[in-house]
Image 1 (spheres, protein in one colour):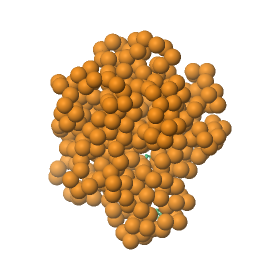
Image 2: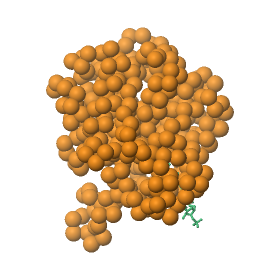
Image 3: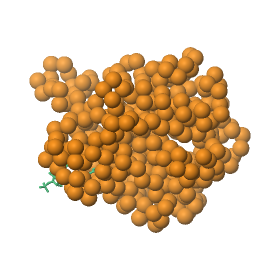
Image 4: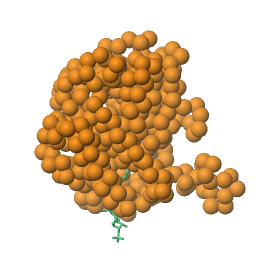
Length: 332
Ligand code: UT7
């Protein structure tokens, strides 16, 4: 049995936070943000809109487009670092209930911006082992709830949204997800973290303060490691599978920073039309960014059956991953 990437869906909240809005909040400028990141605006969830609300909306679309009935879905994985509730219950179980999925296996994955690729690799393994047949992989983030809007080093980057894919069993090797690489290095954990709130920061820690529950990032160091790691990872996955970069129809990277995407794209000699870019309008939505970007090319009619996607991501942990995924659904 193989795992096929059957369909995609996404949800983008309506409220928009522009660079000029941020100019009024912190010491920054539209010019700086555009030049250093490529971001012009990001979407922010409504006050009462949760990560699971957005994830469920994205998943509902992915289910509809897959042609697979809800009762056939036997697992739901949610990649998120901004869950509805800290520790428990998982956001995946809440999404499953909102979708009306009955007694489905559901759990969250914490791999930050690489979460969607990690979740995809778990779905692939469960399907190939024969344990599950139809797995919903959701990436959903309400990063605005863990963003410090007084810190110009991070608040200009992040946005909210969700994306979802239905991965299903197939006997047709041409439809199969070809390969997925994942990796991590916890010795760089302090580059990108929410330091407080977990058992790593004890309750009597005098340093404990609300700001520690927000994301903190050593941006420039993270940037350099991201470019280095992503470049070698995508080169390796292509080489190991004897696939030329010219055979990739859509390079769908995690949308953290235009300069990172450009550096990796250049290393692979990719043409502009191969590179999927949404960072300008959504910013960095962590685990949601790759499925949201795939949904964009689907919605615009650019993603067709059989076309090869190369996914890559890098994030807190540190974690990274890449995947070679043919689109096994019907184009729009
Ligand atoms: O998604 C998961 C992984 N995350 C990433 O991959 C993010 C990686 N990092 C980045 O995208 C970039 O490092 C940033 C966009 C966060 C920062 O860009 P940079 O080119 O690395 O800038 P920098 O941190 O080296 O800062 C350069 C200057 C500093 O000023 P001085 O010391 O040169 O006077 C900063 O204080 O820019 C200043 N600066 C800002 N200025 C205006 C930092 N943030 C801002 C800002 N507006 N928002």
